[in-house]
Length: 482
Image (tube, rainbow, N blue to C red; front, side, top):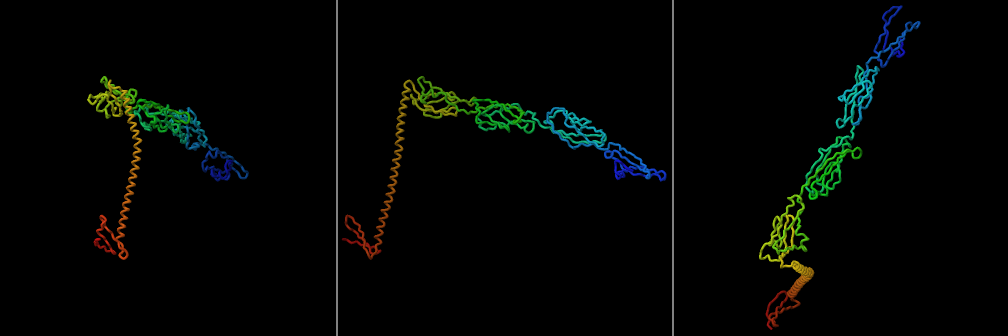
């Protein structure tokens, strides 16, 4: 037995001959198959049988192996991953799947296991996988499904993952189209007002927002990354502007195109503060002479003061008057609301009257008025001239005093210094003389008896009354009359 496709060893592993009779003239055999064939390994076997060893009679037998569906189809990968840009045109062919089946029966069919039947499709015969509609990453960013091959008996599936790549296709949004703030005027620099925030559904640079004002402004500044709005050193002044509006812009992908922007209207209402001091408009510098308010009281009429406050809101610009001092505060009164001056009738108020009046305006501004009240008996120009002459004399006297006063202080300082030095000298000289006298007295008492005799006389009218003498250390008092 021989084979053209198998070696004798391999052949013997598949077949053996079994004799079924012992007839000498004719022997019969059965060809027994020891194990099954695999079509994918052996498709046919050619056997040669030798019938007679003497004459080498041969009989050939060819065995064809029939192919059956006994192998499972396979894909070249167990996982497939794809990336697709969102908003891509559709439909389009993404991939052609090809499963291998060693049975080679050409009966493989392809199908999908997915919940998105309307999004994907596959050709059941050639495995072409197509996308049926565009993707929106902001709605769904990835898909997972299974691609399967079926050969009518066996099924094989591989997993498939599709990631949707982000595109800059979303315009940012604020929570509202406008916001309104109410703030005080004169807020200091860098005062926090508000932090705005817009939202962009795109990722990374496509979703990173930068904030700015759509037009230049000197009142406000905005942080480009976090949207914090603060005041600048140019303060809001209610007397200049009561309402302020500006458009805020938020844009993504500012370093390339496309850059998409959204807008927010910022409205600011200012609150008036009592930040302006009232000031006197009558009498003004034009209605006074050398800052002297001259009032002609011939018709027995006193003027009315007028003040103004630049604040706009009524409660902040309300004006009232009252006298707080001055030499004329007991001679003149003023109306609290109108500012009308009134001269009190008194014997002491004899014209002309000259003096000062200190008036408080709305308890914020204090003004001092120098006032001359006269009638037709007094020429104000002559009175003013005499005041100037008196002032000049006072200034001259003051100037002389200013010159003499330093000289006086200088001379006084020198004199005091000399006196102190003289006192010190005399004090030391006195103590010196006292010490010298004491030394002389000590020399008389301590004179030795062996060498000297000392005497001390007390005299009155050149007559000697007593004489003291001493010998050694003992003193005797004897009176010797001469």
